[in-house]
Image (cartoon, rainbow, N blue to C red):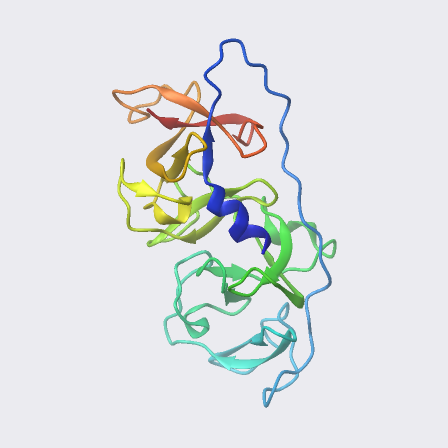
Length: 243
């Protein structure tokens, strides 16, 4: 239940008291077991880390989230890209899986095996739709840019988790200033901002000190903190919301 619980908290408003000094914040990755390479159900034995372990028009993917069993499954003729929105695993290309928790195509990985596999992201345990770890299966987080949402595809947004950092997830329907309970209720480039009371408001992400065109064009960029009152940062920049 790790990630969904954090996402439900949304982002908290920075404390209003003057002169608040926040401690240095850094991301912490989550570990996990090695990616499974066992057979699943009627599928042929394969490896989720080997794009060639299944035949043409198929891929190795999770067949049973409860056990972590994998097998060769069909892939659409024109699959979407990694970190794009998905509704079915067949829509995701080889080497990725339609993440049951985030509803995006998350690349498979193995902790410690190939540090570059996840690029700037983190290799974390894959979970089912309830947030329960899938035995032996790990996936990459996107380490997406909250302001631009890159590399999240159409229909996906960049959300923040205090444990796993920034990752792509299906975007919600609430527009700017719309009501939200968690950031996944908000559309792309938006974060659910709350002062700790029930509910919140969808506001645009921004970077403190960013003076580029279009950055909070007529408003101020106010700092954000996570539920533990740590400042939220991305690649050294302090994140905020357009007030």
